[in-house]
Length: 211
Image (cartoon, rainbow, N blue to C red; front, side, top):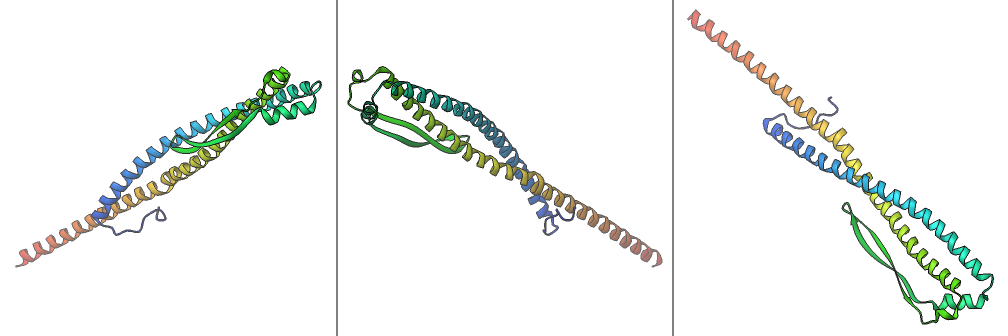
């Protein structure tokens, strides 16, 4: 217990301050614990969704490769290269942010502008392969966004958890132990004061009787 006691002057003012401080610490602990629960739930949801999306991305990659291989079996490579270079005029990832349980995380969106080409001039299977890869890019960006969010939310979970643990195991017990110690000191002083008063009364009584 002595190791947990804070080094302060044993006065009534300090006792009042400690009682206020422990109330604030307990309120803060409750707020942080509630936040930790919300963050943990969000993190679990992100991890679950990320796993499902990763599986979907792997399946989509396999599907796009099958489409391209089927098309390549009867489409000249030059035509494939020509469509690949003209199908999209521009393609970019737009980076923004959003907030999850108070944590700012990245928001990635795929923006593309179709190029000037005639789809009728190419086999439908080749056009379908192009669409497949375009959808794949969107899903990969979404997966990257989610995995970055998992890292950031996970860091916040760890940070809040450390603060909750510090309040639970260090600060609040230390304040409460100090309050208990001060109360014992005050009770001891009160007993000593009573004993002194009693002795003084006895001494005064003997003097008055002897006089």
